[in-house]
Amino acid sequence: MKFPWQKAAPEPKVLDDEAIRQALEHKLLEYACRYQEQKGIGTLLGPGAECPDLYIRINGGLPIAYIHEWRLNRSSRTAIVGHFAVEKDLVGKGFGEALARGFATAVCREFGVEKIVFSERKYSKAYEQLFKRLGAQPQERREYPGCPDWVWTISDGDAV
Image (cartoon, rainbow, N blue to C red; front, top):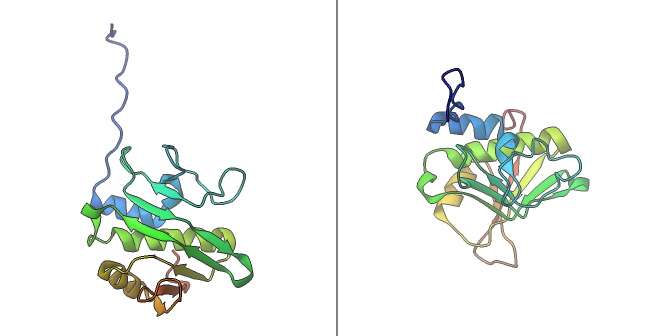
């Protein structure tokens, strides 16, 4: 039974597309979770934070984006990303670029990364277009012929 003096729990704020792009770019780690968790990790440093697979949850539901199999090469100040994606219904709406910039900001700030290598296993025209917009350069590799790595050298303007 509810009493008149009891307040209803506030409805969770639902972000629109522009707010989601801003959140991805400027507050990524607040929404980046480990597998089957709902709470953002907040940092890539510290105990429990080192996680090769990140699931980005905004508006409290299923993940809308993924950064999988990422790892650090500290000696070359490089982050390598094995799989990078947004959900299919979000492709072509600027979410991928915001996600990449948010990830760049996080790894630059926390680890001093200067380069990100996107190492997808399958070629996609959408990936090529996204990585070119970021300024990444293709680099051939032997493991997956015809599917280049995309090397993004991060400038000060790329990481916000």
